[in-house]
Length: 445
Image (cartoon, rainbow, N blue to C red; front, top):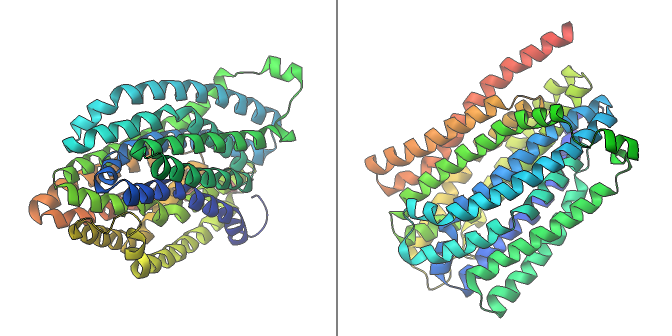
């Protein structure tokens, strides 16, 4: 990432990530589609009721591991391989502790949170079943995310793609077996997800262990198995990113509580729309990961001008990709939504889903710019401003959900995500250009 044209690097690095994200989205889409078609609208609505809580599990773990990847990318760019190896070992131990603690926390709070969110009573037990099984697999999710982060920090975006491909195929097969074949309904979908995450974690971990660059002699391992200083650096960078995800998740759960009050058809329609949300943002996630690696490696190599040049290419490429996805959703969105909403479901559910997905698609470029500028700041080691942007997103999401439902009714809910993205994006763009000037001043020194 420290040489070559930024646009070529962006596409060559981001394309495998996009394909990996597509594979990962098959988890959500396959679970939802099979449940929607074979287990009925009530089971599908229960899945939607648990969605933001599941996002909190995966989102926080993913954010922490991405935070760990920032110093790894910087050390690799600087060529400090001994320090890199020590950082990876330290990150692995911290990740294990986090995974176990987060599992215990999630299992103990799942039911109280469902009650707090006002989950419709006939959906609550099914949603709880799904949550308990998925949260039990947090360790596998953590291993995959840490292994994939290490690989991406070293410029390898293809190995995580292979892991996701294997995992997604396994997920589809197990979903059909457990939900359609064994009639395990929502519990079967959750079990399929956990086993698939296990497969992804093993494949990625195997790829990491093959890397010669991370192998060290016995003396080095004994002397530097764990570093408190490195642990402090990792946690300093990852904690704001984790808090950022928590804030976004809390805002999403507050929005879910408002949606729950609008009835089962509205919940089903919104849930169907949210199943396609991952498809909408999949390229944004890929560009974001590419930007973190690009800016981190070039910061480590002290190539400050390349950072600025890279963002000039990443931003328009991201917007262009968002416009392509927007067009696809306007043309084929209704057809995609039929995967989740069975023919016998209330027509209102489809109307809600179509309007919601089109509203999000229309403002998709905002989300893509948000990812790019947030990742640029994270890549240079600034995780505080992205955390503040998460707070802005949370406040906007909750505030607009309450304000719009009280002023224009349920139709206002469709615009809540756009408002949340916009609040975060504006803050991030302003902060990036301030930081960019500081980087330019370093270049002149």
